[in-house]
Image (cartoon, rainbow, N blue to C red):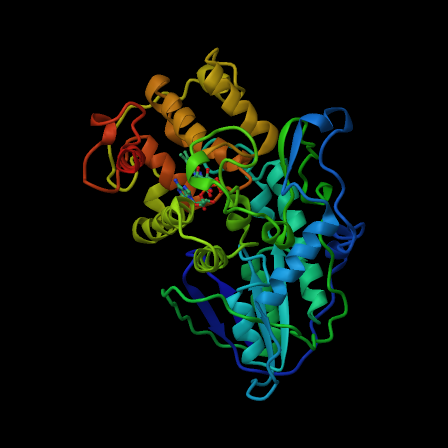
Length: 448
Ligand SMILES: Cc1cc2nc3c(=O)[nH]c(=O)nc-3n(C[C@H](O)[C@H](O)[C@H](O)COP(=O)(O)OP(=O)(O)OC[C@H]3O[C@@H](n4cnc5c(N)ncnc54)[C@H](O)[C@@H]3O)c2cc1C
């Protein structure tokens, strides 16, 4: 048997190889059975997120109805699917551990597992630590909107796996306990392998079955079961989680001209929530952009989308290089600076009550929708650390609570930039630009 999982960096794969020994997966404990008792049905269409009175001011992202989303996603799946013969496939059962790679399309671990085994067992662990509190300041680790987005992603993943002859085993608990216990059932040893090359999207086999026999596959948890209060979007953009929603979004229209905008669903791709949950592959975006360029035209928009994605990779590799120091107050360079932790000042920023309309509007957008434009993020970050002198980690942890697209590498990487903990050039970037975003502003200058 093999256990495979996608690792945090977008271009690498960690692989745990475990020898095969046929066995059944043990059923849930009573506690788990209670926890997942009243599950939302994964095949049901999601409930609308907005309160009806405010419906007129809400932009659903993507702005399509559910049938249209499923239709476009299915067409895309067809383009990226294949029907290979079973000849050459290995034996035994392979476990695929889904973490922040909640998709079927271009999922290397899933494909490798399918290729190297007779049966595939996809597993997701609902880790209670994700719903605890942030490390330094005790904010909720996952806000209600991201929790709901995760539920959408899991429901979509389960649905798409079932369509391809599999299912998703959902367990509550720590992966480091659940996976070894599954592995123990089958007998295991491990080895780790990492890859760092850019490749084309993997063509997903139309059928991934047969699934192993499992007593209880578990269900997608409801928001209450995650211990998170329900929050409806009352204004602005309401994002729908899941792979199908991501695949149905048309993103190549006028990206370059609008990317530095701040309002509405169409000024930038809005791919980050799906990228962060792994329900969308960055390689899929790359391949679609290349296809568009070949079939229609290469333009500023196509160039800049790929360029922005490099920032995502950059912060991932940066995190690999600097590790936990990205979370420390002095950053990787251990810069010494006196920060304030003034509660009143921080709360006025957090709640959008500073009296500065630009800051307040952006902060309210964040807590109402879970999203903020890139330019907005830069400005509120700069305001907190430079104008208020507040400990940047308070801002970063608040973003961690609220952002739909929260990603440790991009969030803490960008915050350490904003706070003046440069990773490049070896100097503070307060010297060269108004908001202290040396790197970004340099790029903007080059663009002009
Ligand atoms: C203080 C601060 C915190 C941030 N925290 C996060 C975070 O937790 N998660 C996150 O995904 N992004 C974060 N960003 C980066 C950026 O703001 C968002 O990725 C972007 O606004 C998402 O919108 P989009 O998908 O429409 O981006 P687009 O402009 O359409 O860009 C396409 C993709 O490129 C990547 N990208 C673009 N800019 C950046 C960047 N500066 N850093 C890293 N990746 C980038 C994203 O994956 C994005 O989806 C942060 C930026 C700042 C200044």
